[in-house]
Image (cartoon, rainbow over all chains, first blue to last red; front, side):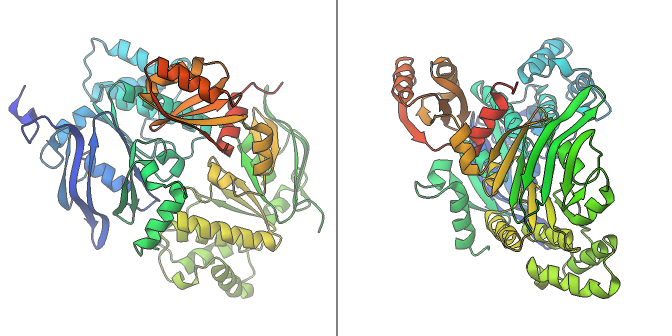
Length: 254
Length: 310
């Protein structure tokens, strides 16, 4: 293995994601303001907040698509600024907007992403078959991606993000606009991955989605207002939504 | 006015051999906030399109604001305002400019335009931002602006498509207060959503599946009528592995992992003890087996995943 490929800090880290004072400005706008958190292996971590909170920007920095303005982040031990390619090879990313090829079939899309990630041909067919079975998409292999329902599109995006057997998955609002049944099916697949050792970082504006995470960070206008398990943040008295409202008001961000 | 704001009688839409909407009937009283739920492929969108005058029914009747959708689809459009997540406001126009644009689209007479725009801006609480570019505003304010644009021509009925998804909790509460005010004035709101917290805020709901209405009533009615008898929240070791055991336990209708817990829909109260025993003996010590209240999501899962209607 090439020396370049070794994680930056030289020692195996327990944390899959680590960020310290991570910030991003676009001109005058401070979109992400000093985020610091860790995500452990096999954890489901949720970035929870309304549109405009900075979730997508944070995701882009963690997946090494965008450089921070200040602060730092490491994923699987690799620094996002210095070793972005090492990260991209080892993670899967499901973007908010449909980013598969509408005029390719389900099978062609998976093949395309397998090529893109240089998945070895040996074993590729088996892996594709298993992914299609796990997502229930076997009957749809020849359907054009643009003809899939919202829930099915998300499953296709997930399969394309899993084809190269990543160690961690980043999902940006994966179930926006998806009906509750499809959402449940999608999370069933995600939990099966977690049981096999996958680490998930999910962003969502929905409190009921937040409750599906092991730990969450509530974001509002670029800041992390609270971090902990959903139970810790929502006490016996209040719901997660009420707790979030109190935090927004308490931080004078109303 | 006692006439129904929206009326559907045995509404049918077929596309070739496929029946998308299969004899749907319901009535919406004026001033109601009416929610429309259903999984993808339930016929929900097709029904809405017919009610908006965008698609002609195959058979049956529907009237919106007293206007027959089959005989006068253009007349229907004048009765309604439509607000959608995807219905873009122009990001590089100000609040006022966006409203001026829509006032033109709705052909509001020129001499009434300014007064109407002021009225809508005041009512939706965006007047302080009149000169702000839509793209520079937060989502919560943009939602209210989108609603304002849908109200310019003073429709009796507004269609709201997932109106508060992605919005922060404070803005969401403010938005629904506004809907309540409109409702008190007799304006009818038809809301479509996949989010149970929006459904919860509706006066009445209709749930569609495979082209038919499978449930209707207030949120409370639906929970009483359709929720599983008992819902349990279980906290145990290794919930993902425990899931298989739970699903095989008799009396369990449905179970799913939710974070560190299992959400279990059950037939009877006795299940709590049985589950605790089963799980513990299988090596998944339970720290909590708690009965919780059923929500609309439980109703939705029960109706959308249970046996299909005959």
